[in-house]
Image 1 (spheres, one colour):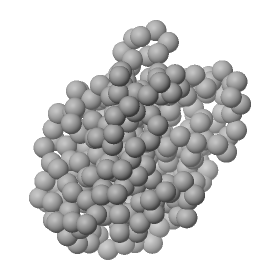
Image 2: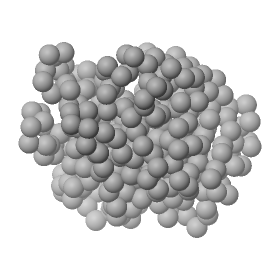
Image 3: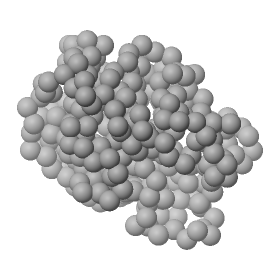
Image 4: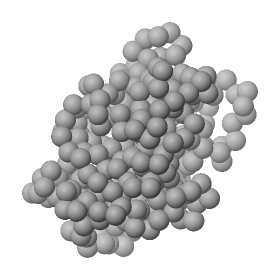
Length: 305
């Protein structure tokens, strides 16, 4: 089953420099991918995984742009290309800068439009967030997930009403005894509470994504679905590991489970979900997603609540 929007030519512009948090110590740079044609284009703000940058995730960003979305990809401070020293004092605050980066992009969409003349008067106010791995947790906070501040134990809550839908790919699950000792030491902020993450969200998980962050099995990666209120959808990929078939990039070395069919299902499912959740079609994603899984029974299954 194919998506309903005929693929369009795509343009990409980078870097676009935005104002970052005052103590960030580096400019906030963003890549924009958008269809060459079309108006009233919905926006996806995408948060990359640990060490990545806006140069990655072409299999997602290019596909979404070809389907009529404007994709904004900030480069977070943990990007390998920025080369932060292991002793850099900002390292303990990377989670905070990540969240501030997404809010900064939200606040400066008008500046992005000004910086790319070809986008002027073509953007809609419908906005989704998406992210992979650590980027999934980063994106989830704008949808209403909370976590504790490891510095003082206070609650970090950054839900933003401008964001009305989300796609969380290989998003970390709950903390506490579900975290490995390494994860508790390295990522003390990784204790999400999904109970108030209410906007429509598609969670994507691999059933062979074991990883080193959790003491549990691959079911940990579905917590954002299981522990949040509806409306939600879960795409579980058979044989999927952390790269989910190849979303980090074309020919990316970290893709341990490369499979074009798996990647295609992710592209189709996320597109159908976002088109519906952001009001681009009259069809409800509750009806459009199950046929996708039915047509790709070897690749995955979809649950909805």
